[in-house]
Length: 445
Ligand code: PMP
Image (cartoon, rainbow, N blue to C red; front, side):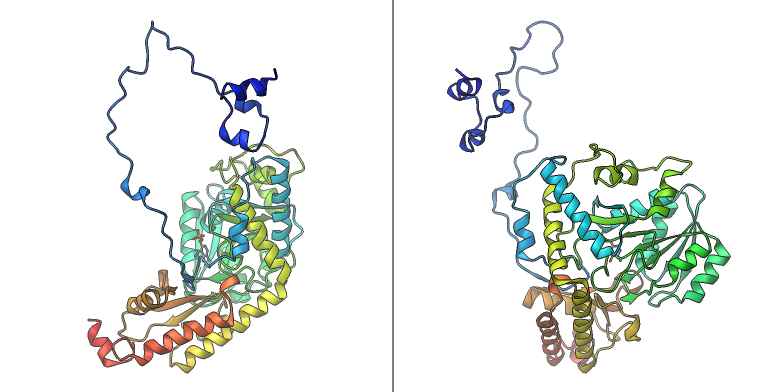
């Protein structure tokens, strides 16, 4: 009798293995535990301990998730095709079928970053993990980093850089963009090892132009690292042509996959810095040499670094396939057209944009000035409680001053723009809710 047949008869194979007809040695490994030794020291007592923590009552109820339209600065909704991808069977994180999917993700990322660089992969974590990975790989104690800060993300980057004992220098223009002349002067003054910039500042709604910044960094011997979490896919971005050394993004904005990973790319200049560091990278999890190996970017066999988020990688693969099917040029012009429609519609309702120059606005996250004396929370609550539509308030320098409306990826449609404008219009027509009416002001105090 075969080992499997004997095991089946003895009831030792699990129901799963029987139902799929798989013959697997792991199944026959299910055995009775060895008899407990009766002599010598023992860790366990005969009587089980009394449970101090019972099963929580809340977990007996079915999972309840309302369906909301996420028109804030992120996450945005994902297409069903992306959700379905996550229902595919789990694979092991080094199985060839899975590493093949990782390679497909890398190709999609090279397209969306517009790069042919070797080291393109994902950090398992959200956009912040991309920022942390950038800082901990590029900076050694005492290294100078210049941060072009025009919103909260520059502040966060400075905080992270300080944690790595970097010498942090800041130039600040909250809610505005930096010119090449300003960058040139600051690079000449501070002589940093790294210049950090944010393309789409989701806290202020500013779009920082990047063309020319890479050439300046090369002139001054610095690396250029760019956060494009809230902009990639919504506006043109060319990693190679713009001489950008490091870039990272998030999955949950324009790409429209669930929040889960931070796609990231390091070019050869950046990897040379990583490989010639005098001090070890302080985070094992974010070490780019390990990540590059796990993602098959260093020409050596992949080694176990961490367990990749399998289902999230499937979702990203499908979301990138959708981006590739539409094409970047079409995606960029869809974002431009929808943002223009939104801004014009808001103007017609008498509302003002926080970033007054339309050329300086990121189309992905629009910041709308909250009129004087108005409680912004009443408007966001009205959107949510009446329509299950999320718009959000400000963040960092824009806190309390703006509403933020996201138009990203799957959610960036003329229909969604119309919906936001219709709700805003209705709100403005209601005396008890109209931010501009006396009654609203009285009610809000
Ligand atoms: N950078 C920018 C520009 C962002 O908009 C965000 C998220 N709003 C982040 C970084 C951080 O990303 P996450 O919340 O996914 O960690």
